[in-house]
Amino acid sequence: MLLMLANTSTLLVCSVLKVPQIITVISAKTARGLSVRSLLLELIGFSIFLTYQTYYGYPLTTYLEYPVLILQDVILLMCVLFYNGNIGTALPYTILFIIGWRLLTIHKLIIDLAMSLSICIGALSKYAQLQSLWKTRDSEKVSALTWSLGIYTICARIFTTLMTTSDTAVLIRYAVIGVLNMWVLTTIMYYRKTGKRRE
Image 1 (cartoon, rainbow, N blue to C red):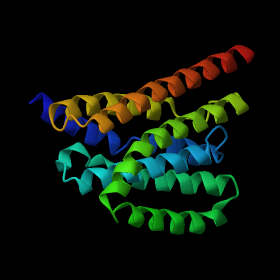
Image 2: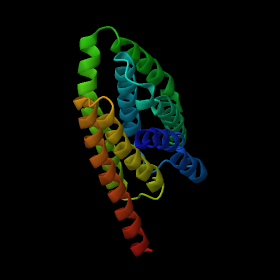
Image 3: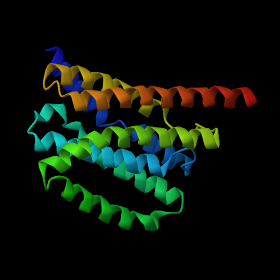
């Protein structure tokens, strides 16, 4: 029962995870404080993770949210590129992304190596977002709700993974991403507080 609740709540939360951030960017008509590099790395990490889960035939309930997260990341990336004036780079990114995704499933060794690298890719994604926040010292356009929801889903996925597959690579990835998500959220809150003090 608890496992079903964790799987269902994760899917529901992930179905709207990036929506607050997308709305923030569109309503502000700026992507200040958001990192394109972070979004690209996150998209690559999500794609590797989804491919790994399907390649090994893990239960659908353990990764069903990833197609939804990928779609939301693509929409958010397009919004950021548009508001940064770089929408012309979307086509080359798309082509490289599709080619890379197809290469993952050529051999078991490739997907296993990619999964090991996805931990680093996910960590680099969060670090790129932190760098963007440190550089701009402005977190007003970065959604704290999105990062909070991300922390919840990581915690829920650690639980569901322990209860189903106990895959060490998956657990390490979730643990690393969870800690870094908390760091990003803390940084967002810190800059919100210092920004209010300045006002």
